[in-house]
Length: 81
Image 1 (tube, rainbow, N blue to C red):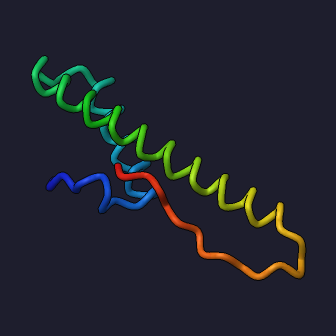
Image 2 (cartoon, one colour):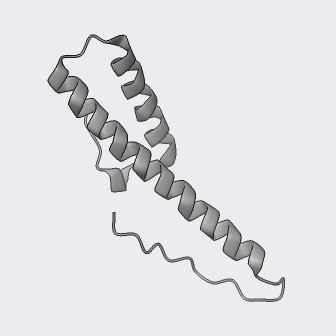
């Protein structure tokens, strides 16, 4: 499977890949080097997923904080990751 860059992966793809990595690691049939690479990728995916969720929470908080007559503003993602 080709590994996508984190910035090009959807939240759903992140979860699916994380699940696959967890299954491979739990299976215990990977070499140490492969297991370490999978673990590193899993950590990166988990961080990206958490960032996506945090961004969504912030967007929701902004929308809920506005009064009903306020104009909508474009949300700007300020994270460079």
